[in-house]
Length: 345
Image (cartoon, rainbow, N blue to C red; front, side, top):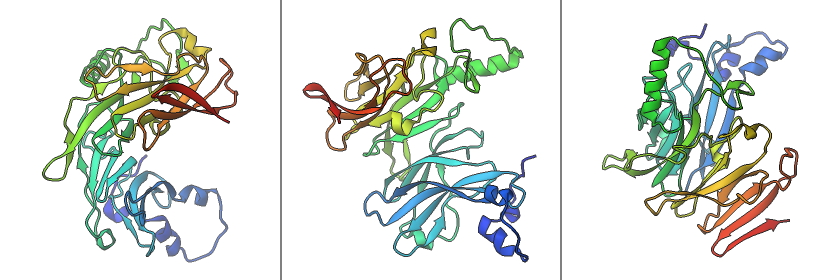
């Protein structure tokens, strides 16, 4: 059983080991108790501090874990735990958008679903005596699985698992209706039926694009309706099973263009092709049409990354042999003004 959170029940890894009296040999249980630190990001302007994620486990029985945000001053080595540790609660995929604002995903919502939260840092973080309570930005009836914020903090992209041609709310309604019917029968008319450890039951990871703005109270909110980039498309972005928005999505330097990787799940051919393509969306025009920039190559094209200074330049990784998963990746440069490809040797 999972341990229920109790403030008096919390003990850090270091506190647990400092409380031990007798020495003993290091074993596998000690390895499991180690904290997991990940995803460090430098301060966006001065680089003198970092924020990182720390996953820690219930001591000493490992019945539960929690992931929290931490701040580290690189000059004084002062560390501050920013978010409250709660067993079963995990903060993830954060973006330090300006001096004192963090946007991140967490299942801290009352619904236990992953949503977008904002953390506002005080002027002097090192003097923080207690945890900072984050503000919930979204309240969707589905989990948000991926998050990407542009450099200007004027737009963000997030993903939800939705049915093609259905909105987030309509997908949630359909799930509730299916659950209420007690029906667990699926009819498959194409492959995949099961991919790795997951049955393909209809929902897809779709990227949603939305404009954001800071209100007078300093809290960000959505200033436009989220747009489902793949609304009618039976496909995933990020791709399954290992796709990651941080490498398969990219905003351009001005934030006015968005690039993403997707595969072709619409037919059973997805089971024997390695073809992935990169598509771009011009966000400065109302149509938001996706344009494929790599469709001439029937092998893998993935991991787009816009130039930090030029919206017309995009770098990505590419295979040249269709159907060959072990083909060597090469770095290519796409320039839309003028149109050309360049292979980086």
